[in-house]
Image (cartoon, rainbow, N blue to C red; front, top):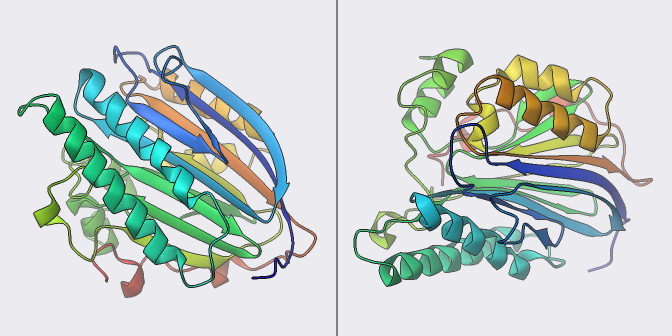
Length: 293
């Protein structure tokens, strides 16, 4: 597979324990870098620039309490090394599913090892970039957003009943965010194998454009901040590190009730063209529903 062109990435990530939690169950994969286990609870900030033909970014938000969630998210990001490679066009979906199933099995095994009452799981929000193509994927309610021409688009679909209600027009985005069942997710890595079906992973493919800015975040940000506020802060013109700092600070000022992990990725490339927002997959299209095959 011949590379069409290299993509220059400017990216930054911060993971913060928040104001209330006593441990951090989040972790991230920043183009090959993961948050070391001894940094998880003290906080971590990374900034870097790369020029390459492919890039991989992800956030995992662990569940299970105490060390269980930390182990689950660590398993999730550690396993991403097998996706950190050039992948033939058309093969990404199978490679992603293989990774997710291996991670699920590993989380289930870790949970069993640590006691029958210890249930572990982790969400996944992932962005893979190669040549002129982007893949966004998720399991659970961690999210990938794209800011294009100062217009914010959520590229992933939460695996939750309230998100489905929003897609059907029965809830506004703000009503969904404040719903008492907003954090009740149906899919996660580490869930029982017998409950996994074709909708286990949401994945969408689209063309990159010059100047695209991506945000990947755990629900420690998206639960507290409105869609409009996220759009405003991403559009302010600050660099990636300044932007993630301001987003995390805003989440803390809004209560910081959960761990908050935020990643901003700016994309440039001489081979990339500007594209209208209308060319992006529509969130309300049937094929982009998390219940679609």
